[in-house]
Image (cartoon, rainbow over all chains, first blue to last red; front, side, top):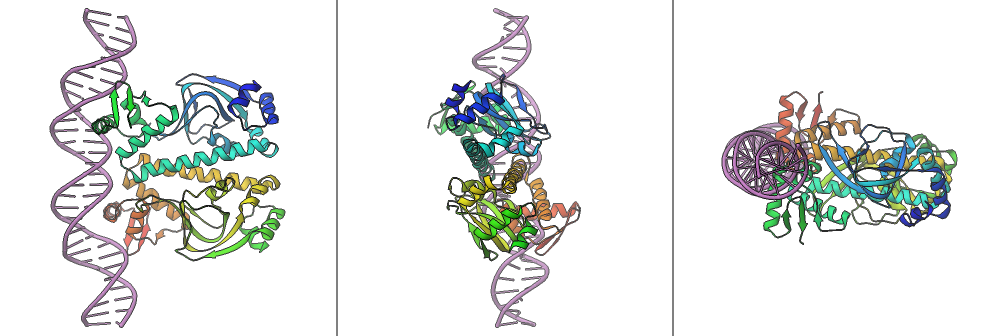
Length: 208
Length: 208
DNA sequence: GATAAACAGTGACAATTGTTACATTGCTTT
DNA sequence: AAAGCAATGTAACAATTGTCACTGTTTATC
């Protein structure tokens, strides 16, 4: 187990990797599994080895709102910070592509902050970059209308998967932007007319 | 200087307070001063002794979007985290009521994390609570229409100042919610008819 | 191959929000 | 008291977004 961790988390010191290997457990989840729910207590800090997790916010009426993806080499910022206070989760996390996760028990997360410089830096950096990402998300809803938000959303997806072919239905997009399918269809059509995308079934191609 | 710090930040250990006293500087700013701008490098972590600071996001067109207030006993989460990486600010911070601030130089902020347990916990806790606050803000824009957002906004203000008389003009509110004055006037009128608020000049009274 | 089920397109209309243009009110200044 | 200004009220209309109803079209299932 040592080798893959070292590869996926290159910044980790050798001692840290050994500590992880000795104390953390590896768990697998299937696409569709929900690994964290709003209101649920967080018992572990989660590091992603492989696969993809969607982190989103949910309201009382079942509305969803997409925040960001967790991918290999990344960690869940929320689980880190809530960890130290044994707090409830404020977010939902759903597996999008089968994942392997390193589960670090809460007490260790905290202990390592003092013991391993590379862990400390990883945690701080994770938190900072997620905070920035969330700020950008705020911008997109606070300042932009749905057409721009849609473009922003599609670009983030393309960045996250590293490809220009987005396997998304209009309904999925609508849910994640908390609007209706019809609105998304309408806006995508306009984008197609402007030559920004090409529309296929379950597949949106980013052209520009 | 020792005594007031101890009073305003009761969780700080005696050694930490001494370290602050020996190394940090106190600065004052007047209402209206902007102490942090988007894009500016952050050189200090900011702790608030007295007064009130508004933290908000600004877009290219001058639109504003209110995020939260910093008040006595609190610290700027952004300045803490960016600190360690010498990052640019992603937010604006404007003085609302004359403030006295403790400015902690970047290198110390980082060093103390290892040396002072109470500093470490303060930083982590600050970050966690701001993250949660920002998540709530996302909820309010993602899931709610302007009428509910306005109510949410007024309540947050009332909580922040601990009173029910909000000295705000419609224009100010409109700016902070990134909409227009007319919309706010319209919605406030409706709220008045529903008996939720009483409207006076430059003064909105929360009834419920 | 027939039949669902999911996905997508579209027109019509409602509701909300944004914009324009003025009128009015109350406070401050001289 | 008159003038001036900031704050507020409001009507009318435009633009965006949300909703409903219905039509195809493709994919999956029996």
